[in-house]
Length: 506
Image 1 (spheres, rainbow, N blue to C red):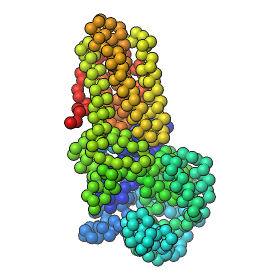
Image 2: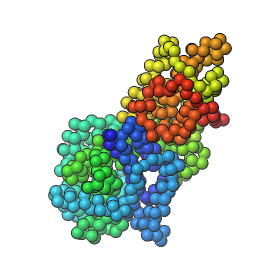
Image 3: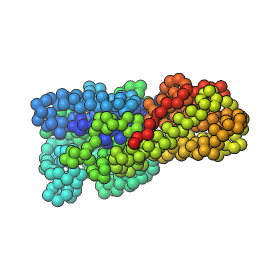
Image 4: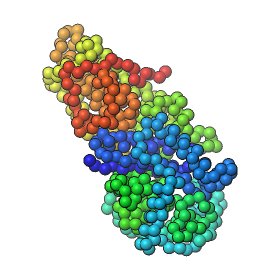
């Protein structure tokens, strides 16, 4: 059984869960569910980054301890994920002792290898972004080039990581492993940044205390580059736990705004520690809302809980991964969601399921007959054989929209097949053998659709399969090698009665 390790970034505890968090986590969950269907042993990690100056200052303003503020936000995440059917293996918090121990262990290893030294840091710092900038990188009026807010001049004693030592090794690795960073446009951005020159990285702070102390020098707190990024190891119990056989990570899913940390800083830290690099880092795009950038000031920052009041979790999952290519920016609107729902879920999938099961009940009492000939159905059968291959190829590249298009294309073919075959006419003219064959192909196509749709819409897919199999089926206990191909149903199988799965929205 192959090991598959997928991670989201650990979300910053100063932020309430929003559409971007939901997007990354849903994508990771879809990938995790698909790999389980492939028979892989999957470890799916998400969590929160609780340390840092921003959290400490925000807690102080509210008269709270940092851990109290963190606890409140963590609870929101932990209540949200079940509503979206997120099937994570672990939820890591950087305030946990298991994480702190790993951070300090990794620090000591880097120190022993000569990758860390003490010096004085002097440069510009953006508190909201937790990012350091040189004077030449700043915008006019000394503003952060990312968030456009004022930065602070900082001078303090600091430990440094010898990032510059790994400039050429990292470039060589990226050029030798073209799938390491995706999509290609992001890989090119990373290469360009590296080629502009890497400076050694300041990795400790003395201006706040909410964090993991530097071993042997506790006036210093280990900064986010090592603290937050090492969560991917601490969740596995690094360095000695059995779960370390999941390392290296199969894929880190991240937003494009934190790609530099995951595709430059993290690989160099791992190189210095003598650890294998993740197999893949995929940076997805951002969402706008009705064509406008999400922001608190505009009042259009979409909260998952608000969306879940109007839409089922499965429908939101489907829309987010269907609407735009993963890796590109996308625009969220209720009208686009409704249009996608009605056209693909209600009109195509829901309609095919309802009409096929209804005809089977009406003409055959819900009992499948046997297939007598494929001669008239070669094109449909070839499409049923092709769809799983297309889905697999798309999922390997995290092209979720293409995987869904492959499924939808087969469903559309199924609807055309109904019109071309006219089962009602076959029944009227008593062509029983041909009727049995047509109905079998339709139900088998719907069974395949449910299987391959299940990573995206786990609850709807199981409801769909329950009608086909006439009993509840936990799809995550099945595997595609055995069940994900055409012809898996047997003559004499009794299907359930149809129930509307996707009622059309007016």
